[in-house]
Length: 69
Image 1 (tube, rainbow, N blue to C red):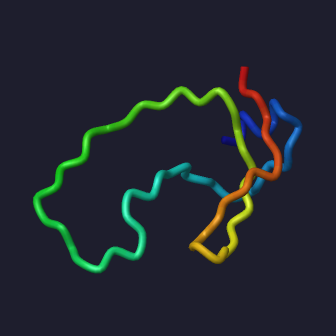
Image 2: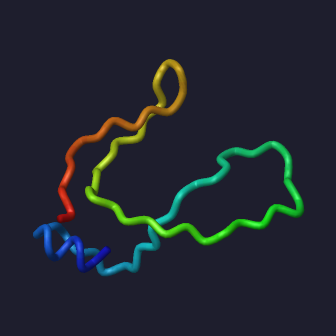
């Protein structure tokens, strides 16, 4: 992520960031015996999102996008 930020002339944090995907949020029950397989992604764009509580739940509008090509 630091390499991408440098290439796009964005702020480079002094802290390490670990990109992730949330599989379950606010789960009510634990689920046992689930085995996840690695997932390989090849993103073509980087998006800056805003997160806020809307009338129908959390909303994530895109504030800005950068192409990664």
